Image (cartoon, rainbow, N blue to C red; front, side, top):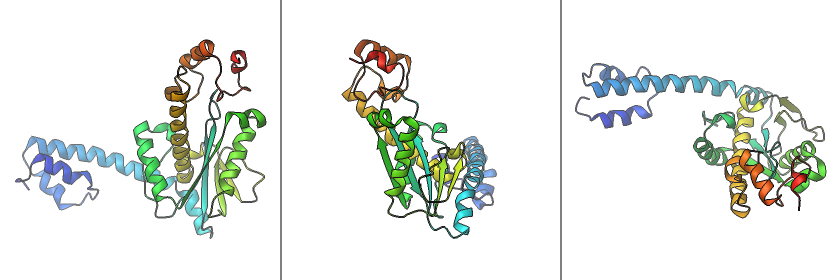
Length: 257
């Protein structure tokens, strides 16, 4: 083992999760400082990994319970964009299989933009099915934000090809759907399916808002995603409201032209 370079050793440790691996014993006797540093880094990384793995399995408890009860398809649901002054509300329904293994999937607000982007692609690739629905600002003004969110959530379920036998919904009950539901407060921290839906919905909406930033410059949509930040409000005062602003949200009506 001593013939291996430190770079090669670090590479070998990247995917190692067996604490009884002979490699670890061999490295513990390697006198090189770089090797010992690499071993310590692995130990710290492995501790974080094991904690994440335990948390991942805890967030799978609802799905496992319903699968054991005979539900083949369980859909987790979440929404993004109820609070902004501009842009749509986006909802997502995600159906996962028992083999789903992306342990990094958690509440989207706890992830970096880079982590969310990577997980978005992996979730869409690994999920049995993903359904995304966008209700624009006009729909929000027509129905109100809560009803527009419910409408989008129900549509996202109805357009699934694999109709779920159970829904796990983050905070918003859907009484018009004749499907058994579990409504969870902070569901994206308690259910892996809801967390996956949260990540997909947020990434989808963030990309939309970055596109809108190019169409309607001056409001900083690419950074604030439509929320009422100082730069956004300054843009409203200077330029007035855009077609994607929510007329029913204060202070937008003050800036209609």
